[in-house]
Image (cartoon, rainbow over all chains, first blue to last red; front, top):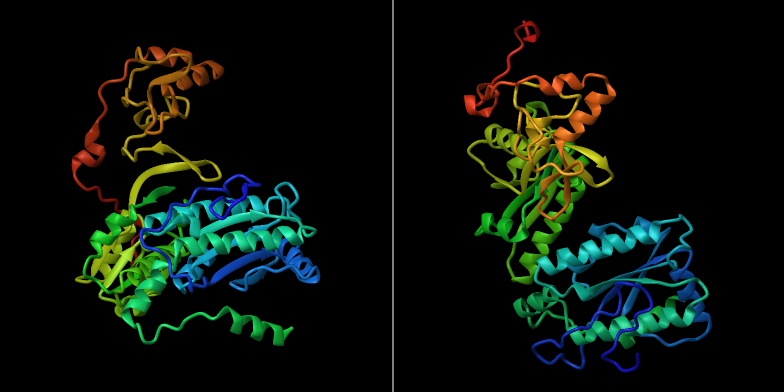
Amino acid sequence: MAGAATEVAETPGEGKTIEAPAKPVDPRFEPEIIVFACHYCAYAAADLAGSMRLQYPANIRVIKLPCTGKLEVIHLLKALEAGADGVYAAGCMEGECHYLKGNIWARKRVEYTKTLVAELGMEPERVEMYNMSSAMGPRFAEVATEFTERIKRLGPSPVKRAAAAAAPAAAPSHDPAAVTHEEGQQS
Amino acid sequence: MITAERKPLEEILKLLEGQGKVLVAGCDTCVAICLTGGEKEAEILASELRIMAKKEGREVQIEHTSAIRQCEWEYLDTIADKVAEYPVVLSMACGIGIQSMAEKFAPKLVLPAVNTNMLGMPQEHAVWLERCGACGDCVIGETAGVCPVVRCSKSLMNGPCGGSHDGLCEVTGPNKEEIECAWALIYDRLKAQGREALMLELRPPKDWSKSSSGGPRKMVKEEAKPV
């Protein structure tokens, strides 16, 4: 399970092999990733990762949900529509949802969204579901790193690519250092 | 209820070829309950179409709306202003709703985003089974509440046929799922009611003139017409 080309597969549905993109990805590419995190687990795990001073890519933007069961297909699509390069949901371990089955519903919705994304001619791997408990700070950091690496291999979202092609001068280059700085000021 | 399935995106895109301003219109009754064409699904399809356009670098204006029922003039009035803003409406209603929309807003281009497929019963959440063929001449009084017209694969009026085995039909569904033999069900239920003698009744060929083979049907209730 080691190496950049291998996905960590702790739960079903994860760990799909990703084909290399046809064109080499710009090494300066910094993906924008939206994370829908459950209040009871992944969001707390993110907190723990922070308390533990764990490093993970600054590419992820976390949106807290009361439960991943609140996640709708349209939320995932809207993220992609707005130009996110990847989006994932992080819910409780299966069988441990605070609301019993919210994370199972979320997984089904994520899987369905993958079919829609494929129908749109995009890589379904841009959408994923992960499970973790509130005690799994290191796992939160690991997932953030793993998913960011996955998206880096896939390259920018076709939505973003088309926008950049239409207005090459106006396409801003994403600077993760600036974001980290900005976030540091807020905290 | 009336059930429908969304058309493949490829087919929808072909219908919309060359169109940049599209209103996706959901219907919040039957197709919403069968999770195909309600407001939620209309929003998803509109988002999909926008993503596709962005991906291809096309400038489009695609929004969604929904009416409580697209098959009634009064409910179509509620979305008339929105419809007026768009040259093309992609309707997610059943065939009735789509046609009502096309008639109400003629000559506006109204396109279907779904295939209306049956009059189905939600057997469990997210599973629908065909229960009625709207044949216009109901026989289930003699068949213990089981419709042989749509539940028998051959629509036999005098069953079962030789393809019935252990309560199952020799025909399987599109996904190889097993189909209950309607006439085995009819026999079991008639027997439980003590009316199995009805199995011996010879039913003449069905009068299909009361179904769609008699041309488009029209129902008028004179006693209820406004005065």
